[in-house]
Structure formats: C-alpha cells, structure tokens
Image (cartoon, rainbow, N blue to C red; front, side, top):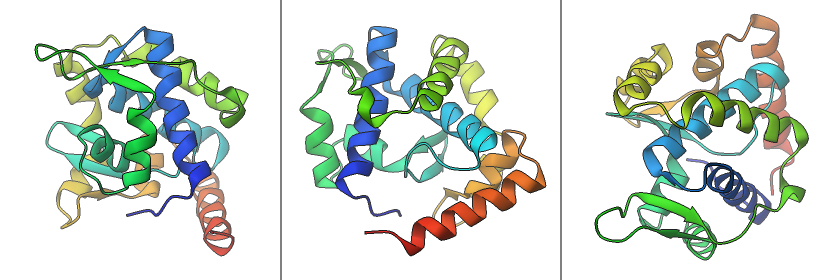
Length: 184
C-alpha cells in the first residue's frame, strides 16, 4: 500500500470535498466510484495519477483503499482519517453512509485538469444506480485484481480499462518511476 505525505493526504481530502460540495453530499459507494472513474480518466489523458491512492478490488467494485479505510475509521493512515473527519460528516444512524462536506474544497490542491475530470466523473457516475455502477466497475482490471492475494488493482490495468494506449502506459510507468525516485 502507498505511503502518503501530508500533501498527498490533503489532495485526497480536497478531492472528496470537491465531489461532496458539487453533489451536495453523496453516499460513500458513489463517492468511491466517482473518484475511481476520475482517476482512471486522468491517467489515460495525462499519463499520471491525480492522487497517490491505491485502488483495491472489493466485492462491489474498486475503492481507493486509504480513503475507504479512513471513511470506515480503520486507521491504516491515522493522519488521513483525522484530516478527513475534521472536514466531513456522516448522516445519522439511518444514513451513516451518506457524507457531506463541512467546508469548500481548497482548489490550491487540485489542478484545472483534475477538476475537469472530477466534473466529468460526477456528471456521469454520481447519480447512477448501485447495480449499474457495480456492473461498470467490474472490468478486467477489477477481475484480475480479485484473483490476487492483496486485491490491488495495478495502475496499468486501471489505465488499460480506461482506454490507455501503449504510449500512455509507457509514460505512466516512467512517471511512477520518477515519483518513486523523489518520494519523501
């Protein structure tokens, strides 16, 4: 699983806030799928990731694993959990899975390209039914990851599922290698 620095954590928090503000609140299933599709599209268009999240293939589709853990208060990354829950709130006992933002997103952490991809994903996926989202997220990337012990979806499989060509995949791999060289 990816280790995040504070900027990486803040970017994830701002992505969540951006989506929750734009949708006026959302259940976390649709939040996870919206982020997955935005991230996948971003990788295909720009050959890099929007966030430093790791995606896992859970039974109902892919989830950004660190965010999933933070929302469920599984403290894989306590700092992310604390940062997130200081700026969002859940519904009451009848709608605990429904999340709302306590403040606007800080756009200093999100590029125009990122907000464009988030907007597209919000428009396309945030209101789809559970069944349709489940069907649309059970592609080859999810299927392959489900057969692995850690259930991690590779960036390459995710990008291919989004339509990346070989040149984009090569660029994505180079970007990931470069980022590993300069990681905190």
